[in-house]
Image (cartoon, rainbow, N blue to C red; front, side, top):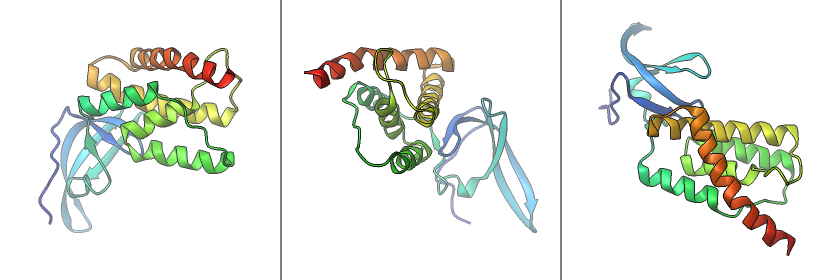
Length: 176
């Protein structure tokens, strides 16, 4: 068996790419198919879900510790940037956005949040755009909340403040 490159302790917040921020609630040993397996037991409160990840597979599935402050700063700067709207079909863009969200990369998630953000004075979003925006902003807010020791609504408020501050600047550029 490969040596454990990553090690998480009970109580640690971790990011599982497909599900976002969870907490290690237990380390377990289980007998599966005649083999003894060490497992991280993760709890995702928002989804009311428990996930067991073999410790030797944690790295290959992309499980990681919370982002560094440097990465968080990059994500916040990304939110302040100019939205990049591609002129490809929505179905293709939606797939790209979903892939970025599921990558677990904080900066990629911030890009999706920025690109799909609509200020109150901007045109309405389609239902599917809104769904993807909410998934991305929620994922971003949960990691920010875990890093800052706050709750998701407070973190989301902070993200929306950053977006609302930057959006008018780019809306004016577009109008000129």
